[in-house]
Image (cartoon, rainbow, N blue to C red; front, side, top):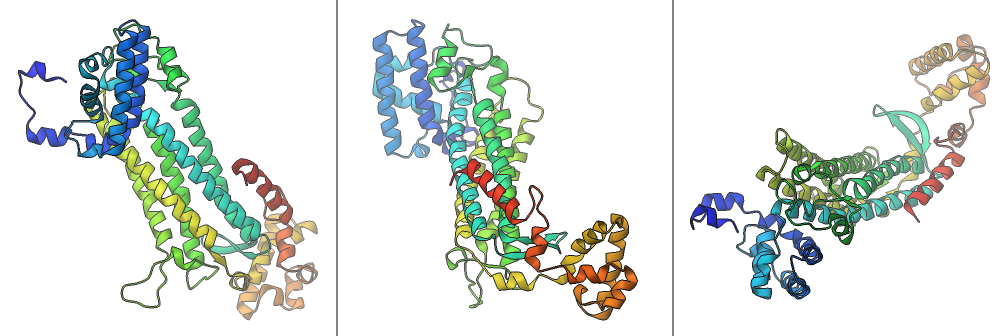
Amino acid sequence: MWGGRFGGATPADALDRLNRSLPVDHRLWPHDVRAAQAWAGALAVARVLTAAERDALVGGLDRVARRLAAGNPAAEPDEDIHTLVERLLYEEAGAVAGKLNTGRSRNDQVATDVRLWLRDALGSVDAEVTALGRALVARAADGVDLLLPGYTHGQRAQPVRWGYVLLAHAWPLVRDRARLATLLEDRLAECPLGSGAVAGSGIAVDRATLAQALGFARPSPNALDVTGDRDFVAESLFALALLATHVSRLAGELMTYASSEVGFVRLADAYCTGSSLLPQKRNPDVLELARAKAARTLGDLVTLLATLKGLPAGYSKDLQEDKPALFDAVDTVLVTLPAVRGAVETLTPIPERMRAALDPALYATDLADGLVGRGVPFREAHGLVGRLVQDAEALGCAVNAVPGAQAAAIHPALPDLLGSLGDWEASVERRATAGGSSREALAAQLAHLRAQLGD
C-alpha cells in the first residue's frame, strides 16, 4: 500500500506488532465494505469508474463480505481492516480493485467506518437500557404497597414506597437514552467519506449524495478537522461511562438491601454465586461486577481523553487507540446490562423486613410539619421535634411513645399530633406533591416512564 517510498523495505517485526490493528478493528469489516461500495458508486457518478467497473467492485466486495463473514478476519496477516478488505478485493475482482481507493484515504475511511459501527452499537445499547428501564418500572408497579425507610447519608430518613425507590433508578436511564439519542441524531450525523487524507478529495465526488447513501444527514464541513475528530467517540464513552455509573449505583443499593443485615430483598439463585470454601454463601456477584464494570468504562473514557490531549488537527496514528477503548466500553456495557436486568426481574422483596425497619423516629418530619400547621415557624418546629427525639432516646422509647406530659412540656400541640400520626401509609401519603412518594405521585411517574420506555 505504501511501500514504494521505502524501496521495498519491510517494517521491522517490532514495529509490525505495535502498528498492527487488525485484531482490534476487524469488527469494522461490514462497515468498511459498505462504505467501499458507496464510494465505488460515487466514483462512477464522477466518471472515474465505468458502470462495468463499479459493478465489478460492488460484486467483488459482496464476495469479500461473504468470505469475512465465514472466517476469522482477526487471524489474517494484514495491517488493518482496510488493507485486508483491499487485498481480498484484488483476489475477488482483479486489477480493477486498484481503482477503488482513488480519492480516498484510510484517514477518512476509518472515520466513516467507526461512525457507522457506532450507530449500530449505540442502537444495541439503547435497546438494553430500555429493557432495564422497563424491568424497573414493572417491579416498581408491583412494589407500590411495600413500605420501607428512605435513606439519606446512609441513615433512615422518611418512609417511602419500594416502587418509588426503584423508579429513582429508572429516571437516570431515561436521561441516558436522551444522551444516546443526541449522539445518534446529531454527533453521528456527519459523513467524513470524501475528505481524503487531510485536504479533501481530488476527485469531484458528490459528498452530499454519498452521505445520504450511507444514512448520514450531511457531509462533514472540514476535511482536516473530521479526519482527526474523535469528539463523537469521547462523547459516546462519556455517555457509556455515566450509564454504567447509574447501573453501578443501582447495583450498590441492591447489594445493601440484599445483605443479611438488611434483608429487604433476596436475589434469585440464578443471579448469585457460591463460595469455594463456605457452603452457606450466596454471593451477589452480578451486582459486584456491575460496580466494577463502571470503573472499567470510566477508564476507557480517560484513556481516550488522554490520547486526544495535545494532538494537532488532522490524523495522527495515536487515533488508532480510540477503538480499543470504544469497543471495550460498548462490550462492557452490553454484557452488564442484561445481567443486572435479570437480577432485577427475579429478585424477591421481603416486606416484613422492610416494615420492621420503619422506626417511629421517621415520623419526625411529620411532627414538624404538623407544628407548622399550628402556626409554628419551621425552624422552631425543627428544634422542638429534635428535643422530642432526644427525650425519646433518653427514655429508651419510641418517639410516639413519649409520655404526653413530657411532650406537652416541649410544645402543647405535640401530644395531639403524636396521637394523630396514623400509620406508615398515612405518612407516605402526606408526600403528595409531584415527584413525591405518595400513591398518586407514583402513579404519575409510572405513566410517564411507560410512555418513555414502552410497556
